[in-house]
Image (cartoon, rainbow, N blue to C red; front, side, top):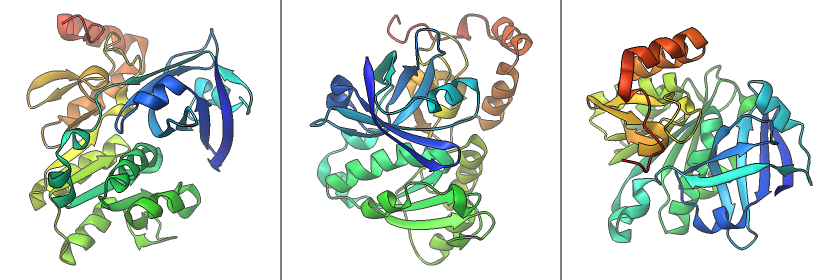
Length: 291
């Protein structure tokens, strides 16, 4: 069983938990995710890793209460245990594979939207520990739902923006990125993690600015093993699955229109049956290891 060591509300509907999971804490890398179940009757929930501490054996998760299962998870308290806490899953960020000298020479800008701040923090912290301090644009609709600001500022050059202008730069993350660009900042890569619509518009802007861009497609994952077909997407004209081939992809190659349409269809049983019939053998990606 996986005991909750710490529980904290970051906003009215956003929860942070530190969970005892020593094996995961020893092996996790930025960009990877977990599958959790509150109890034996619970649904599988994919969650990106926010932080991990190999010495303490803990893994930190952040989730937003958006449905019945996340609500049930939010009712758990310190000392309670998750029935399942499986990971690390997915491919880590390719930044982890670059030679240190090359990594330290890169000019990076992360863009974090909403609860996408959690996986961005994991990457920023890892980079900071390796001598790389990247720029980061953190966006939220309003100041009240901005999370982990102090933690983000400790490991990056942080620029905060809010859609309603209640805090930081007045405007969304694209407005903030354009502002930094106009001020003379140039980047070798942008990494955007957040709502699908945010990543779509970030990629439109970075394509105009000729900045290579990576996005994390974790918002479309359901099963986490490639078997359900929920996270099927087209990347550069090829079928990929966010959970086994990603979750990170070249944002300029992702077909966001198709991915967002599939998200809408997948929410209904009729839509799922339609997608399965239409996509045939390419509807799912097996278990990710069966070839």
